[in-house]
Image (tube, rainbow, N blue to C red; front, side):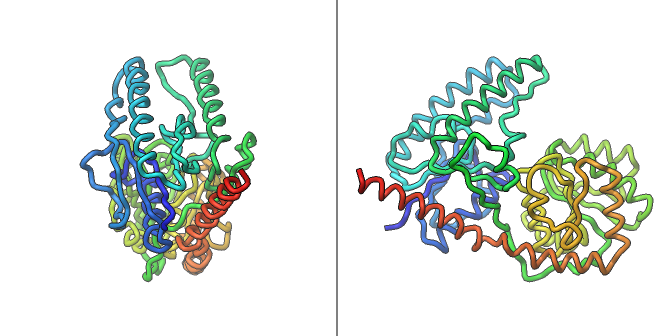
Length: 390
């Protein structure tokens, strides 16, 4: 009999990192390790998953529609949230009790607040796609700062209480693991590579690439300021940033710096590996990350990365000076200088690209999936032994 695994995630239609990772892992577990996989979502009814899913994977949409709350006033949003939480808990409990999974995995979204109370017989596991410092950090310009701090403290305290009850809590980096001092049920499993193409970059094109959502945490405003310095030295080079979100703000910045010809704001694409291969340098300018999967993607394509030493991920992925370069977090001038260094040193750039492709193989899906399998096996063995002893 197949082991049943259930993933709980808000939606699958978005081109986000969490959606990509869950889809990738679910596909491999279903097709290569013969798990029975179900993905339960709350939003995005009638919307097609952005990433392809195995035909053997079942997707159940509980049709809660938390997205309806966006744009509403704080009181209406709070009231609506509690209503939807009640409905979500009721529907999720009914669904899990029907499926009877062996293991239920929460991506630490709304269900983490009540999933331990659902008595469906499954082992509950949490996997976080953020780092602790930037998770459940309540910020609202319309609310006094001291109230924000009180809410954040209460919210995090409630989360810790729930995490302690999990069979296992999985984080993405050893750096982040050290932050969760309250927990003793924590382990580290890195994000897997999304792909490892046969083709690789020659690192000869005059193009730099960056990838991510157009949001403040991705630091593209910092990258554009750095590129303004680079462009003065190397006007023949282009920077292409693939993503979407706060596009108008970045377009305005590019225009104000007269960079429209050398800094191109591209839209998301499903063939991002081709875009990496067309480039010679990758840059991650994030203020913080959960892991930094785009770094590993670029490295898999033979593109040397340059990244801020932001929390968390880059320092565990990049071997500074060997397969990429690390930059003091937030230092725009240092970032510009490192980009110029790789532009001006062809052989170093090419050799770093070759090393990047070799060193990143440790993140291949077959390696990461086996770590998950070992975790599942251990949890189920412990549960069975406890039942026998009981």
